[in-house]
Image 1 (cartoon, chains in turn orange, yellow):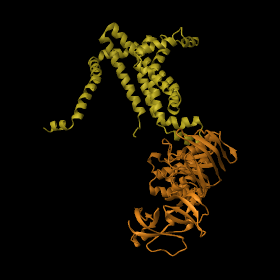
Image 2 (cartoon, one colour):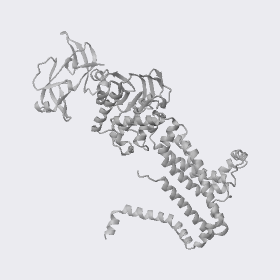
Image 3 (cartoon, each protein chain N blue to C red):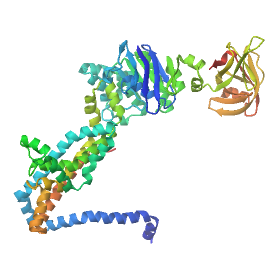
Image 4 (cartoon, chains in turn red, blue):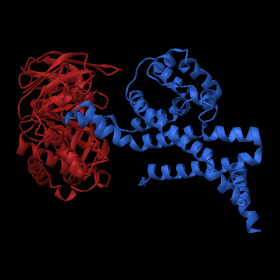
Amino acid sequence: MIEVKNLCVDLGEFVLKDMTLDIKGGEYFIILGPSGAGKTVLLESIAGLYPIKSGEIWLRGKDVTGVEPEKRGISIVYQDHVLFPHLSVKDNLLFGLKMHNAKAEEQKNRLDWISELLGISNLLHRRPDTLSGGEKQKVAVGRAIITQPELLLVDEPLSALDPETRESVQQELRKLHKALGITTLHVTHDFEEAIALGNRIAVIGEGRLMQVGTPEEIFRHPNSEFVARFSMTRNIFLGKAEKKSSGDTVFKVDGTEFIIAADTDGTHHASIRPEDILISTEPVRSSARNCFHGTITHVVDKGSTLYMTVSIPPELSCLVTRRSFEEMELREGKKVYVTFKAASIHIFD
Amino acid sequence: MSFLKFIGRNRLTVTFALLGALIFLFVVLPLGKMIFASASDPQTLWKTILDPKVTHAIGLTLFAALIATLVGFLLGVPLAYLLARHDFSGKSFIEGLIDVPIVVPHTAGGIALLFVFGRQFLLGKAFGAIGITFVDSIAGIVIAMLFVSIPFLIDSAKEGFKKVDVRLEKVARTLGASPWQTFFRISFPLAWRSILAGNVLMWARGISEFGAVVILAYHPMIAPVLVYERFETYGLNYARPIAVLLILVSVLVFIILRTIAYRGDKS
């Protein structure tokens, strides 16, 4: 559907280089990267709003690299909505149709359709500055999709919203995508947002594409330390993999040997997700091959869940529910057992 | 006692209020005294209003300043937009040059204009060929006013365009608007308030111009030149009624335009 080939963009302070993406029709594609990674500029380049240094952009098998933005059929929704402040909600929504010289009847039909779809029929005569954050976001999305674009670009749509509105707008986006099937390219720095919405995720950082894959692939098998850290895997170790005479492969770090499922040797990174580690006060009998005794050194209360650091050494970050935390009377200084499967350890370079 | 206490607690506010009052009186006193002196002699004022030479001069002043403002609007707004939107080498040089008319003595500005628009010089000759001459003509008055007042419009319009989020224009483009449509439907309407304010300033500045105009066109006589002439030939008492009339007309125009320009500006 849309192909970005070897795109290079000069951001002044650094260069975004060799971006190659292949987004399928109807896909909800996420670009995940830290702030300042050039995500917005990448979107603007795809829309033709930012000059590119080199590379090509293909839309539906046609090269649109040199095509003006108004002729690409690519709509954009910015983080802080960017509604036309001098126009009513209705005129904001109709702007694109008017620019395309749509007939009055079609304008009316599409306006009814979009305002019903987004539940904003009661806002049509309001001015943008009288709307709440969530309402503005809906109008911005409506304005972008009323022209039925080939591709919808969404720039951090949830970042400017309070947590509650965030949740509802996120659901709205998912619903909308399901209902309309518009190919969507969404950039964010929020991993959970990426997991929740994306069919596929591309992680960018250090001026380039780090990894492309399904949320599961990025989540479970980060291909670099950058991706792993970014995907909130809190336990990342650098150590040595070694084959034992017993036939097991172990990963040595800080004098501790983790049994791993991967068949490898040499120096590697290993990651274990905090939620894959079981904490108990007694040793657990299970098929999990890794069981260690350690001391709780630190507890971070997140409300319904808690992160705690258990030092074997090395230090492992583990996630427990408030219920088990209270039942086991966990606290700093307490000795506990940590148990996890060999397959839970992900090895990467 | 409590008054002294109040002063003791608000020394800065009180000091600044006293200093502020001085400068305020400095501005208001001469104007007020002149207007009241004229009001006590309504007959002379009325005679002045009926003097065709005076009404013609005031009418000409307003008209020439309006033409200068229109020319400035047509040529200045595009430049203001370019300066607000693009970065290029030499930009700050251009911005600096545009503001030069504010700082040069206006008689010197008039002389400079004469060197380009005078009959024997480049543009003077070119326009002369199509029958427009800038010496002792309305056209001369207009370019003199334009020269000294254009910086106000360009600066104000530029600031107005800068305040318009570039992304509004970007969104408009993605929705199918051409660069022209984007300018006329988004950028211009959103910067309109600043542009209008710049136009008001420009017109007011044009009306008040004397130095540059007097070099290019002593005749036909605009009001400030007429005031000067009456003062030079007949003295203070003959210059005063015209001066009063000119002040009243300028203030009236300024108030009307400001009201229009800032109407509905609640934010």
